[in-house]
Amino acid sequence: MAGRVAGRAGRRGVWRWLTAPFSLSGLTGFALWGFILLSVMATGLGFADLRAAGTDNSELSAIELGFTIATTLFVVSAMVVALHHLVAPGTPVAVRLMSFVFYLIFAVWSVGFGYGFFWKELAGQEFTERQFESAITDLSASVARTSAALELSERVTAEAAALATQRAQTEAGEGRTCANKPASVPGEGPLMRSRFAFADRARNLGEEVRTAWVGPVADQRLRLQRQVDALVKRTSPPASAAVPPGERAVLDRLAMASRLPAAERRALFTGLHEDARAFSATANDLRALHAEAFAGRLAQLAAEVGPDPQRPGSPDPARAADPGYCWDVVLNEKIMAAAAQLRTVEAVTAPEFEFLEGPKATRAAFFGLIGWLAGAAGVEVAGGDDFQFDDKAFLALFASIAVDLGIVFLTLIGLTRRRETDTVAALAQGQGQPAPPRLSSILED
Image (cartoon, rainbow, N blue to C red; front, top):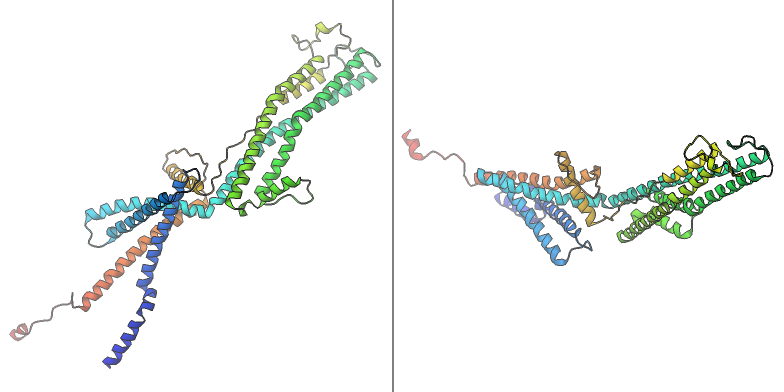
């Protein structure tokens, strides 16, 4: 009987190398080492990205990378050792307190840089696309405001020109269109000729505003809006849309920007942003060149049908002998309104954009976490990357914390099972059992 039991025990011992890893102790050790390796990897890559973000090529040299890996390995190992002494039974209170302090320092290091790694994997590319969408949308909005003001100015100028033509035709057919000459009669004469000449100058000035200023800005606005739509909506214009082949190729790449390689996406975004900045500079140059000039010319044109500069409610006495002078209150106000509209056209503002995909995105997320924590504590921290701590950032922080919590949990489980194993082994060796009574004491009784 004893031989059969020994044989079965021997057979179980032969296969122990295969079953041991799947036992509770084996799985606990496997999971613990897995969490430790994951912590080392996430912390190391996050730390490497943060250091690489300060370099020109966003990459570390072999020596710098080796130093980063070694530092991370030492930090995580020290964190595990500090945790072990913190929770191990029988540890002196002073050692336990010191272990807690150092574990907290190393854990914050691990969680912080690990968060950067997890965030880059979850939302790094999306963050860059969102940053570019925000920049290009802001620029588009600025262009839209400028274009709207220009279109309003053009419309008011065109209406003034149309009104001038209408008043000239009325003067030719009916007369009595000038406040200073209420008795004018229709027909050929100096007044009618001056009115038609005035209408021609107003119309030509309106066309000049359109050609020299409004047209180029309006065309660029349409191109920019197509780019924004392709990037945000992830679709290029339909084939029926009249888009030049070169621009359509750019729109197709914008529509599939999320699927492009990082280098190609960087070139696309950076190139478009530079084009947008060049356009904003051109639009602002046109504004500086034409806004006051056209407004002044409109004001001069309005003065030809305006009142006395010293007495706005009366005709100009200096021009009383001019047979072609016409004081037209309605037309004067209309043209002055067009001049005021040209002066209100705003400059186009081009927001800054930096391609932050890769290590620079990790740095933005890391300092965004610091800003979020500081804000929660009531401390204002200025940041330049406009990072928003959103749901994916919170998920990355949770994943980084979960890795360290896994190490804590499995360390506690391992110590508990070790105490149980040590107790069973001690009992098997007779330790801790009550001592049997001696024979002499029994005989004496």
